[in-house]
Length: 212
Image (cartoon, rainbow, N blue to C red; front, side, top):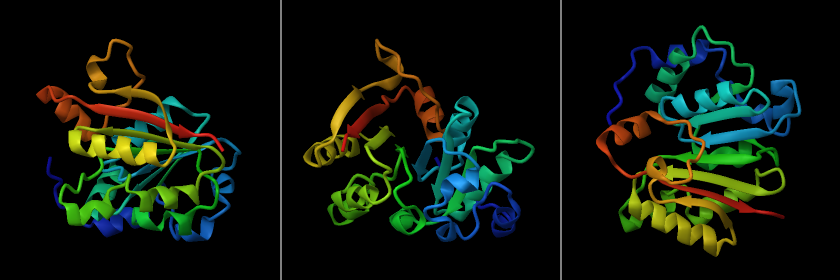
């Protein structure tokens, strides 16, 4: 799936009430940003924001933050949120590798939804489940670690199961075909997932935890 170039993307991002400007200044104060002490959930690489928007609507007693580096995608997400009032949702325009500069130990759950698989060996360190990223996540999790991953890429899924297990995560739930699982998993679909579902592709899913 290709994303179109958004005209005036920078202006759209700047004017959106959902965009957290200067997010590093909110480090250790994100509950104050939301005005409550509810759990904070973070999606890395949110794309057009369908998943994080759906989660914010469905779970008003949790706070959600979508992070995206691509200016066109986050501008599209901001545009889709116009006219909605979701006080438990914020968007951040930033690189995922910088999250330890943006958050203290404030995050309850990290969502990795259809992340770029970076299939070439020399790009391995760019995968969101590479040990270097898992170490970054250690710095932002509030207490217990909780990662939920969805992908259509079988190799990335296998790689992620390996790196997470080697990092001592336990698997609460694993599905090799999310939409055809005999025991349905509560699910909000992303843009990519909606397209892949129509194409009949299996969606791989893992809910991984590490209790401190």
